[in-house]
Length: 205
Image 1 (tube, rainbow, N blue to C red):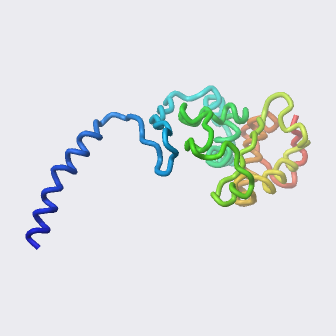
Image 2 (image 1 turned 90 degrees about the vertical axis):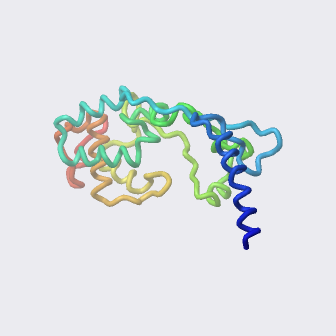
């Protein structure tokens, strides 16, 4: 037993030395993940996002100043579920990327150099992932041109969104997001509200 304790104590200085040599307190490159092929490059630590609000975030903040409780609730749910793909103010994937760390805005192969450039649906399912596709803008010229009114938008959101788990929200949450998107587009006054009965009267221009 004494011999075992002495052996363990002898390893402590070596362990501490290894940590102090590798831990400089400064972010640096990370080694390639285990299993990477020979010669795989180290992965640099990502930059941090700016604390300054984007133009889209400022647009939404102004929109919500006198917004109805339903539109405010929809804005909060949109932020949690939709914004990463459709952008803070609904301008689509190009705006959505602004919420990512700069080093991740145009990432490929899920940050791993040995992953395949493209995955088929079988591999996507195995890794509990989903094909992001190209999230379209929700406002601006030609946006949502195939959806004539807010009632149809509500039905589409409920049937197909969020893309990774369609139908995951409640009916009330889908209606709140519909109200927010309609207000975002200027089709519904920010202080307005929607019901399923009157949503068909709100035209998406």
